[in-house]
Length: 367
Image (cartoon, rainbow, N blue to C red; front, side, top):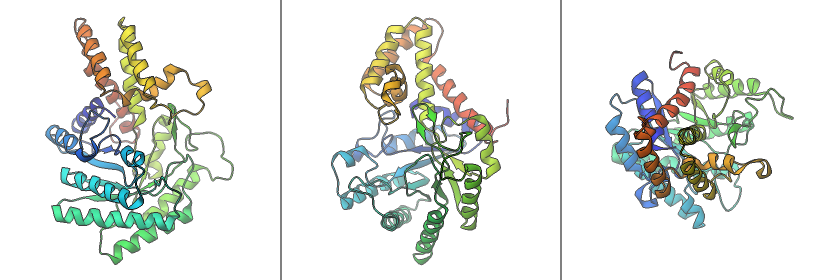
């Protein structure tokens, strides 16, 4: 989500000697061909070099999140056809492999021209799968695959469709002598909106026409175990400690978190500025974040969401803009006179937020 988030991950992984996947969507990080991404203006190679130079114990795994057609904003804005969007996605994956990314999430679920059936989505998945494996072999790079074929909805996957997907993928891999995928991304009843998780996993109420997550999730994991594939949960942000502690008990193998850490850093920045008499700079930052309109995808009801709330949701999208860098530079200079290291304080706040997950997942012992 930010430079501080990346530094926090590297430090935590090395301090506690635990593996952490550093995942990047194509909007956050992409190759130079696509102009990089909004996180620190990094290209794929730039991020990889930065992490590899600092990850002394080799604990951070570089991963592509949601790689596939129309997953980069430029492909959407250009209205690319399927053929061109697939070619564009392959260019992005090629750069991932060249940069040393170890895990590739193949996600052909987005289609700006319609809603293709599952078999058509699987065909696109297979095309990307074969391309990435061939490219990795050509470059003599080791990669593992993560697959996911639908957007998060806040509910859980259909057991029948999960079985069908895994059987189809395994048959494809077997017939083409390709390695089986390591992870499959499944819907466990999580969905992030605003600054909370509105999915069914963390609610005390029953959802109509849906089995409770505590019944459905073990059934999905059982199917995954039968097919020898690990289950990954997306949108784990903002879940309660009690729910997070159930993850290893249920057998969920991996979980993705992102917006929560961006919001954590944004709130920390505002707290530091406003708590040290720099309210004018805080107002400038809030205005910059609000006018970016990046909060629009997260809002449930615009009528109940204040401009400040909206700006907090969008703060991490503008961290690398010249305007925000200027705000932070001016703030850092004034705070330094008071013995406050702004970036260090921000990074420590993000580390604390990440540690909550590491502890609840039993990867790090409670302090």
